[in-house]
Amino acid sequence: MEPFMSTYTVNGVTFALMQGDIVRVEVDAIVNAANAALAGGGGVDGAIHSAGGPTIMEECRKIGGCPTGSAVATHAGRLNAQYVFHAVGPIYQQHGDEEQLLASAYQSCLDLAERYQIKSIAFPSLSTGAYRYPVTLAAPIALRTIVRHLQQPTSLQQVLFVLFDARTLDTYKRAMQQIHDDF
Ligand code: AR6
Image 1 (spheres, helix red, strand yellow):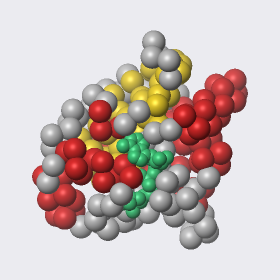
Image 2: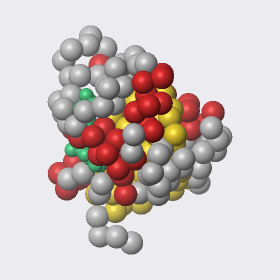
Image 3: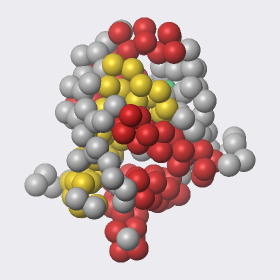
Image 4: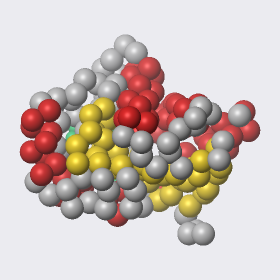
Protein backbone atom coordinates (compact mmCIF):
# COMPACT_ATOMS: atom_id res chain seq x y z
CA MET A 1 0.00 0.00 0.00
CA GLU A 2 1.20 3.52 -0.69
CA PRO A 3 2.33 5.29 2.49
CA PHE A 4 -0.17 8.13 2.16
CA MET A 5 -3.20 6.00 1.45
CA SER A 6 -5.86 4.76 3.88
CA THR A 7 -8.24 2.14 2.60
CA TYR A 8 -11.60 1.16 4.05
CA THR A 9 -14.34 -1.18 2.92
CA VAL A 10 -17.86 0.21 3.05
CA ASN A 11 -20.57 -2.37 2.32
CA GLY A 12 -18.20 -4.22 -0.05
CA VAL A 13 -17.03 -1.03 -1.82
CA THR A 14 -13.35 -0.03 -1.59
CA PHE A 15 -13.07 3.50 -0.23
CA ALA A 16 -9.60 5.06 -0.21
CA LEU A 17 -8.23 8.38 1.01
CA MET A 18 -4.97 9.29 -0.70
CA GLN A 19 -2.67 12.22 -1.26
CA GLY A 20 -2.06 13.14 -4.89
CA ASP A 21 -3.02 14.97 -8.05
CA ILE A 22 -6.51 14.03 -9.22
CA VAL A 23 -5.62 14.27 -12.93
CA ARG A 24 -3.19 11.36 -12.52
CA VAL A 25 -5.63 8.74 -11.24
CA GLU A 26 -7.27 6.17 -13.48
CA VAL A 27 -10.99 5.83 -12.76
CA ASP A 28 -14.25 5.87 -14.72
CA ALA A 29 -15.17 9.37 -13.51
CA ILE A 30 -13.09 12.22 -12.11
CA VAL A 31 -14.99 14.88 -10.16
CA ASN A 32 -14.09 18.50 -10.88
CA ALA A 33 -14.42 21.36 -8.36
CA ALA A 34 -16.15 23.64 -10.87
CA ASN A 35 -17.96 26.98 -10.71
CA ALA A 36 -21.60 27.65 -11.62
CA ALA A 37 -20.64 29.13 -15.00
CA LEU A 38 -18.53 26.04 -15.86
CA ALA A 39 -16.04 28.66 -17.00
CA GLY A 40 -12.85 27.00 -15.76
CA GLY A 41 -10.47 28.48 -13.23
CA GLY A 42 -7.60 27.50 -10.94
CA GLY A 43 -7.09 24.58 -8.54
CA VAL A 44 -8.63 21.26 -9.55
CA ASP A 45 -10.59 22.92 -12.36
CA GLY A 46 -7.44 24.37 -13.95
CA ALA A 47 -5.58 21.06 -13.60
CA ILE A 48 -8.45 19.06 -15.18
CA HIS A 49 -8.91 21.36 -18.18
CA SER A 50 -5.19 21.64 -18.81
CA ALA A 51 -4.53 17.88 -18.57
CA GLY A 52 -7.77 16.85 -20.29
CA GLY A 53 -7.56 19.25 -23.23
CA PRO A 54 -10.06 21.62 -24.90
CA THR A 55 -12.88 19.16 -25.64
CA ILE A 56 -13.96 19.27 -21.99
CA MET A 57 -14.46 23.05 -22.15
CA GLU A 58 -16.31 22.71 -25.48
CA GLU A 59 -18.81 20.40 -23.78
CA CYS A 60 -19.04 22.70 -20.75
CA ARG A 61 -19.90 25.64 -23.02
CA LYS A 62 -22.69 23.64 -24.64
CA ILE A 63 -24.12 22.74 -21.23
CA GLY A 64 -23.87 26.42 -20.24
CA GLY A 65 -23.76 26.22 -16.44
CA CYS A 66 -24.64 24.24 -13.32
CA PRO A 67 -26.40 25.44 -10.14
CA THR A 68 -24.50 25.41 -6.85
CA GLY A 69 -25.06 22.08 -5.10
CA SER A 70 -25.39 20.15 -8.35
CA ALA A 71 -23.17 18.44 -10.96
CA VAL A 72 -23.10 17.80 -14.72
CA ALA A 73 -21.18 15.25 -16.80
CA THR A 74 -18.86 15.68 -19.76
CA HIS A 75 -16.47 13.29 -21.42
CA ALA A 76 -12.90 13.34 -20.10
CA GLY A 77 -10.77 14.29 -23.12
CA ARG A 78 -7.21 13.09 -22.65
CA LEU A 79 -7.63 12.14 -18.98
CA ASN A 80 -7.48 8.49 -17.93
CA ALA A 81 -11.22 8.47 -17.35
CA GLN A 82 -14.47 8.22 -19.29
CA TYR A 83 -16.23 11.15 -17.67
CA VAL A 84 -15.64 14.31 -15.72
CA PHE A 85 -18.43 15.16 -13.29
CA HIS A 86 -18.32 18.95 -12.79
CA ALA A 87 -19.62 19.58 -9.28
CA VAL A 88 -20.31 23.06 -7.95
CA GLY A 89 -19.79 23.34 -4.21
CA PRO A 90 -20.85 26.40 -2.20
CA ILE A 91 -18.61 29.42 -1.58
CA TYR A 92 -18.12 29.48 2.20
CA GLN A 93 -20.37 32.03 3.94
CA GLN A 94 -22.14 33.12 0.78
CA HIS A 95 -25.14 30.80 1.00
CA GLY A 96 -27.52 30.27 3.93
CA ASP A 97 -27.63 26.50 3.55
CA GLU A 98 -24.05 25.66 2.70
CA GLU A 99 -23.90 22.32 4.55
CA GLN A 100 -26.83 21.10 2.52
CA LEU A 101 -25.36 22.52 -0.72
CA LEU A 102 -22.01 20.83 -0.11
CA ALA A 103 -23.68 17.48 0.60
CA SER A 104 -25.84 17.87 -2.46
CA ALA A 105 -22.83 18.60 -4.73
CA TYR A 106 -21.38 15.23 -3.65
CA GLN A 107 -24.76 13.50 -3.90
CA SER A 108 -25.26 14.80 -7.47
CA CYS A 109 -21.97 13.11 -8.47
CA LEU A 110 -23.10 9.87 -6.85
CA ASP A 111 -26.42 10.10 -8.73
CA LEU A 112 -24.50 10.59 -12.01
CA ALA A 113 -22.35 7.58 -11.12
CA GLU A 114 -25.48 5.43 -10.82
CA ARG A 115 -27.00 6.88 -13.99
CA TYR A 116 -23.87 6.05 -16.00
CA GLN A 117 -23.37 2.77 -14.09
CA ILE A 118 -19.75 3.54 -13.40
CA LYS A 119 -17.53 1.38 -11.20
CA SER A 120 -14.88 3.84 -9.99
CA ILE A 121 -14.88 7.54 -9.12
CA ALA A 122 -12.32 10.02 -7.74
CA PHE A 123 -13.33 13.07 -5.68
CA PRO A 124 -11.31 16.13 -4.73
CA SER A 125 -12.14 18.06 -1.57
CA LEU A 126 -14.92 20.28 -2.99
CA SER A 127 -15.14 23.92 -1.84
CA THR A 128 -12.08 23.82 0.47
CA GLY A 129 -9.69 25.75 -1.81
CA ALA A 130 -10.73 28.95 -3.57
CA TYR A 131 -14.24 28.61 -2.03
CA ARG A 132 -12.68 28.65 1.50
CA TYR A 133 -14.90 26.04 3.20
CA PRO A 134 -12.91 24.92 6.27
CA VAL A 135 -11.67 21.36 5.73
CA THR A 136 -12.55 20.34 9.29
CA LEU A 137 -16.20 21.20 8.57
CA ALA A 138 -16.30 19.98 4.96
CA ALA A 139 -14.67 16.56 5.46
CA PRO A 140 -17.40 14.99 7.65
CA ILE A 141 -20.13 16.32 5.30
CA ALA A 142 -18.36 14.87 2.24
CA LEU A 143 -17.59 11.52 3.85
CA ARG A 144 -21.01 11.02 5.45
CA THR A 145 -22.77 11.73 2.14
CA ILE A 146 -20.66 9.13 0.36
CA VAL A 147 -20.69 6.48 3.10
CA ARG A 148 -24.47 6.82 3.41
CA HIS A 149 -24.86 6.41 -0.35
CA LEU A 150 -22.75 3.25 -0.29
CA GLN A 151 -25.12 1.64 2.23
CA GLN A 152 -27.55 1.10 -0.67
CA PRO A 153 -27.09 -1.03 -3.80
CA THR A 154 -24.64 0.77 -6.12
CA SER A 155 -22.74 0.28 -9.36
CA LEU A 156 -19.63 1.65 -7.62
CA GLN A 157 -16.83 -0.70 -6.62
CA GLN A 158 -14.16 1.88 -5.84
CA VAL A 159 -14.33 5.42 -4.45
CA LEU A 160 -11.16 7.48 -4.14
CA PHE A 161 -10.65 10.78 -2.36
CA VAL A 162 -7.58 12.43 -3.89
CA LEU A 163 -6.32 15.12 -1.53
CA PHE A 164 -3.63 17.52 -2.57
CA ASP A 165 -1.76 18.11 0.67
CA ALA A 166 -0.89 16.12 3.79
CA ARG A 167 -2.93 18.34 6.14
CA THR A 168 -6.12 17.88 4.14
CA LEU A 169 -5.51 14.13 3.94
CA ASP A 170 -4.99 13.99 7.69
CA THR A 171 -8.23 15.89 8.35
CA TYR A 172 -10.18 13.52 6.09
CA LYS A 173 -8.56 10.48 7.76
CA ARG A 174 -9.61 11.70 11.21
CA ALA A 175 -13.15 12.42 10.02
CA MET A 176 -13.35 9.00 8.36
CA GLN A 177 -12.27 7.24 11.54
CA GLN A 178 -15.11 8.92 13.39
CA ILE A 179 -17.68 8.08 10.70
CA HIS A 180 -16.47 4.51 10.24
CA ASP A 181 -16.95 3.91 13.97
CA ASP A 182 -20.55 5.20 13.70
CA PHE A 183 -21.59 2.96 10.79
N1 AR6 B 1 -5.72 17.35 -7.38
C1 AR6 B 1 -6.35 17.21 -6.19
N2 AR6 B 1 -6.68 18.24 -5.38
C2 AR6 B 1 -6.33 19.47 -5.80
C3 AR6 B 1 -5.68 19.72 -7.04
C4 AR6 B 1 -5.36 18.59 -7.83
N3 AR6 B 1 -4.75 18.69 -9.01
N4 AR6 B 1 -5.49 21.06 -7.17
C5 AR6 B 1 -6.00 21.64 -6.07
N5 AR6 B 1 -6.50 20.69 -5.23
P1 AR6 B 1 -10.25 24.27 -5.49
P2 AR6 B 1 -13.03 24.94 -4.73
C6 AR6 B 1 -7.18 20.84 -3.92
O1 AR6 B 1 -9.84 25.68 -5.32
O2 AR6 B 1 -12.62 25.40 -3.39
C7 AR6 B 1 -11.67 27.14 -9.25
O3 AR6 B 1 -11.11 28.33 -9.73
C8 AR6 B 1 -7.04 22.16 -3.19
O4 AR6 B 1 -5.82 22.19 -2.47
O5 AR6 B 1 -9.78 23.53 -6.68
O6 AR6 B 1 -14.26 24.07 -4.85
C9 AR6 B 1 -13.00 26.79 -9.91
O7 AR6 B 1 -13.07 27.27 -11.23
C10 AR6 B 1 -8.26 22.11 -2.28
O8 AR6 B 1 -7.97 21.29 -1.13
O9 AR6 B 1 -11.88 24.13 -5.53
C11 AR6 B 1 -13.99 27.47 -9.03
O10 AR6 B 1 -14.18 28.83 -9.40
C12 AR6 B 1 -9.32 21.38 -3.10
O11 AR6 B 1 -8.58 20.73 -4.16
C13 AR6 B 1 -13.37 27.40 -7.65
O12 AR6 B 1 -11.96 27.30 -7.87
C14 AR6 B 1 -10.38 22.27 -3.74
O13 AR6 B 1 -9.81 23.51 -4.16
C15 AR6 B 1 -13.79 26.18 -6.87
O14 AR6 B 1 -13.24 26.25 -5.61
